[in-house]
Image: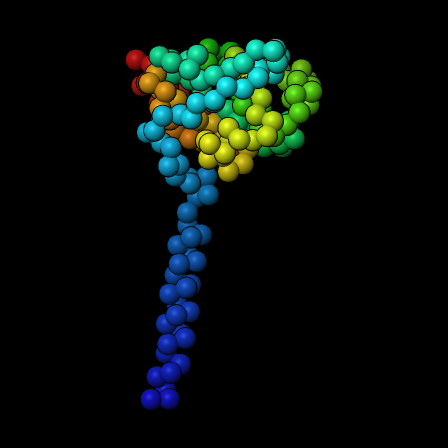
Length: 176
């Protein structure tokens, strides 16, 4: 009986090790969003460059579009910024920026310095809209279809590879 007692901790350790090993095999950028396939949360926020006017996703009803959550203080956002600037030149779909937990002055300064890829930028100063979208951190990008439903979510910076292999094929499919 005493000899079998050591088997219980060993088995528990092996089970725990198996769970940890399985967790290491998962890509943290592939966290499934519960909002995929559901209507994008609605909001009304001030616009970055015309704060007396507001922006709402309802303005894009009937169009495929991208919502890019970013901030001036975000290093990863600066990493993806040239990719967004190049993408914006193509005019595939409207690219809307959601300036997350940031000051408008800092956001305007970054866009003035590095270029403004956005068709419009809404200011989410307190982060409440980001919470409604399930933002884990910035940058995050949401592809929204003509019916206002979230089709895809990119966690982390958009790379040329992600753009070419994932987003553009989905955009083409949804736009046809």
